[in-house]
Image (cartoon, rainbow, N blue to C red):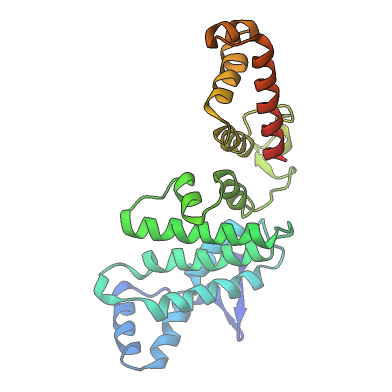
Length: 258
C-alpha cells in the first residue's frame, strides 16, 4: 500500500485507524443529531476504504491523488445519505457510491471523445438500468431500453460501449516469471468478422423495415441458398420479378445502414 500512500493535511492515511461497526453506528447517531465532529471522524475512519477501492484503478491514471479526492467525494455522499434503520454495513452501502463517483470521473475525463448525443443515450440507458434493477432486481434488455428511449437497439449498444475505458494493447495480462503475455498477443484480426454485435443489430433493424416478401426472398437467397428461379417457382412469379425485388431490398438495406 505504500505505493498509494496519500497525505491529507499532513496526515499519512496509512496510519489512520479503521472504525469498527459499533463505533461507526455510534458516530452516525451523533452526526445525525447535529454533531459535525462525528462526521469528520467518520470520514477519517473510512479513508482506507477509499484507498482499497482505488487499487483497481491504479493502471488507468497517473495521478492517484486526484482520483483519491474523487473517491472522497463518494465517501462524503455515502456518509451523508446512510440510513442506520436499513441495518446494513456502511461499507456495503458506501462501496458502490464511491465506485460510481470514480467511474463517472474516469468517463468524463476519457481521452476518447464521444459525441454529446451518444453520451446522452448512454447516461439515460444507465439510469433506466439502475431504476429497473432497484424495482425488479433485474436489468432490462437492450431492446427494452431502446423502446423506452425511442432509439434503435444498436444505438444503445454503441452508447454503452462508448463508456468503456480504453485499454492499451501493451497491457500485461499474464506473467509467470518468464516472458510476459501482453493484450496484443491475444488479439484476433476480426476485420472481416460479421459477428460484430452492433452491426448485427443494425442489420436486423434494417431488415425489419422491409416488406414480408422482401424479407422472405432474402432469407431464401442468402440463408437457405436457393436460386432466383427456385424462388420464382415457389412464389409463382417470374425470375425477373425475384431479381428486381432482391435488388430493391438490398438497395433499401444499404440506404438504412449508411
